[in-house]
Amino acid sequence: QGVAGMKVGGRRQLTIPPELGYGSRGAGGVIKGNETLIFIVDLIDVN
Image (tube, rainbow, N blue to C red):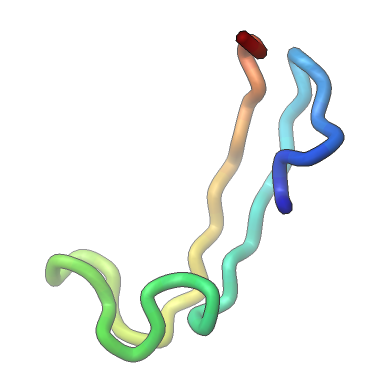
């Protein structure tokens, strides 16, 4: 969903709420349960 419509060279901030991420279980002791994830995505190339 977050990268649809992006063009090469584009940048987007994707905010993933806990229910679409790792939920209450978290991940690997690094991401706590119920945390919102924020990713900065740069589209370098499309193949």
